[in-house]
Every structure is written in C-alpha cells, then in structure tokens.
Amino acid sequence: MARLVAGQEGGLNDLMTRYAELLFRYLVRLLQNESEAEDLAQETFVRIYQNRERFKSGSRFSTWLFAIATNLARDRQRWRARHPQLSLEAESEQTATPLADRLPGHQPTPADCLETSERVAAIRQAVAALPEDLRTPLILAEYEDRSHAEIAAILKCSAKAVEMRIYRARQQLSTRLAGLLVQV
Image 1 (spheres, rainbow, N blue to C red):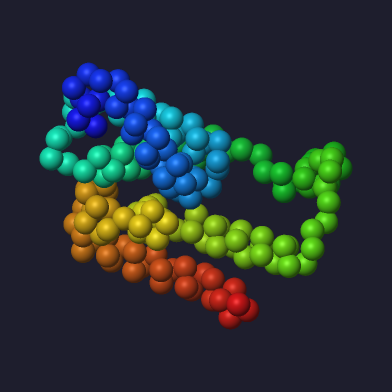
Image 2 (image 1 turned 45 degrees about the horizontal axis):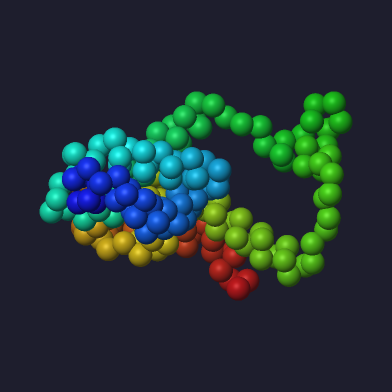
C-alpha cells in the first residue's frame, strides 16, 4: 500500500494478487451471490485506488480493505431490498409451475448430494436471515478468520460489542438450525 500511495501503480496489482481471492470469498458469503461479489470486489479495489491518499500508514491494510468492502456490500443489500428480483422458485402465472422446472437440463441428483445441498442451503439461509449487525461480524470471524479487534475496526465499534454480536448470532443460528443439527 505504501508503494501505491507513493505513486507506484504496480502496488495495486500486488494488493489485488494478495487480497482478491480473500475479499471475493468474504463478499460471496456476505451477499450470497457470486456475480455481485465479483463486481463488489472489483469496485473495492477501484475505491482503494481512488482513495489511496486517505490510507493511514499506521493502519492495517486488510482492515481498511474489509471496511470498504463491507460498506459497499451494505449499499448493495439496501439496493436489493428496493429492487426485488424474481425467484426461479416462483410459480409462473400461466402454467402454475415453478420457473426452475421449465428450464432445460434439470437432472435429478443422488440422495446424498441432495441432502448435502439442502443442509448447505439451510445454513446459508439461516446466516442470510441474521440481522446485518450480527451477520457481518460472524462472517468476518468464522469465514475470514479476523480477530475481534480487527472486526471492531472494520465495523467501527468495540471489540466487546463484536464479541456480543458474534455470540448472539451463534445463538440465533443454533435455534434456527436445531432440527438440522439433530440429524447430523
């Protein structure tokens, strides 16, 4: 980052090489959409380049990176809430069948794959259903291996607040997934 701030634009390529995959995985978990995550990862690096002079040299770059990405993801989620999309599971008004059933190439899967995909979907749905203030710190802690202090810096709150949010998120997940956990 110091090289980028100093005017060496090759520094941005080095940062992208080092952090792009990590950032993409975080955004996929946060947004539950790979194409949106890819777009926001690119937008995050654009914002880093545009605001490179604002970076504080004593700060951790990854904290700044995740703060920018988190803010962009919040903006995208707000946009999504204002612009709902049609689900493939919604029924067509003319045929009263789900749109997914009308798509070509629909093949049945083996029972184990189906069970696994149902569990994954249930977990993703439960995480996605968490309030944003609980979901974001949980994803940063569990999937991105960020410390409570770093999450606190990203979310601009105290480490104790992060700890409590993660605890409450886990409690809500445990309640929502109780039936699934018994089967495992």
